[in-house]
Amino acid sequence: MIHLKIFWVFFKVGIFGYGGGPSSIPLVQKEVVEHYNWLDDDEFADILAIGNTLPGPIATKMAGYIGYRMAGWLGAINAVIASVVPSIIAMIVLLVSLSTFSDLPWVTGMTNAIVPVVGVMLAMLTWDFLVKAKEDLGWKFSLILTVASLILLQFLNIHPAIIILVLLIAAFTIKPKNKREE
Image (cartoon, rainbow, N blue to C red):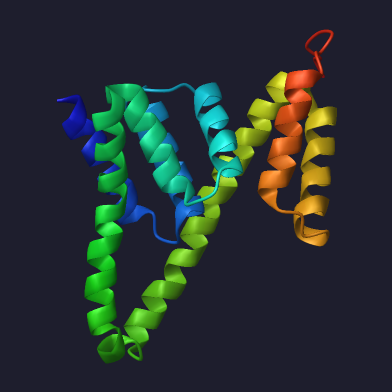
């Protein structure tokens, strides 16, 4: 039964994760943390952070890890296959019909209409992570890290994996004296 649940969760993520890996992250979080309680928020954040440091699509990395955690190697294979099958089917169908329908106004409107929805989902996930960071680090340090990350990513064009890797190394080497409350 767990394999059916794993397949269904990641199949849905594969179907509704319109816009690629980043847009599927809130869907994975909703299913594995809130619906099935396979992970808590801290575990999910850790998996997301580690997944972002590795090469390849985040959705399949998360699917593989969560599937493995829930049902071993078969669970990992099941989750990865479930997460990519919708894309494979969609690519075949869309590529075959793209030349026929691409100029129709309703197709363009549909594509444009989904962008704000994905943006809101990502903003909600970002807010959840900021609140979690505030609980662990306090507002001051959380905001410093947020602004520094924005500058490094957006203005200095430093790859996210490098920033995450440096912060992971810092987290392993720097021992906090006590939890700060702000």
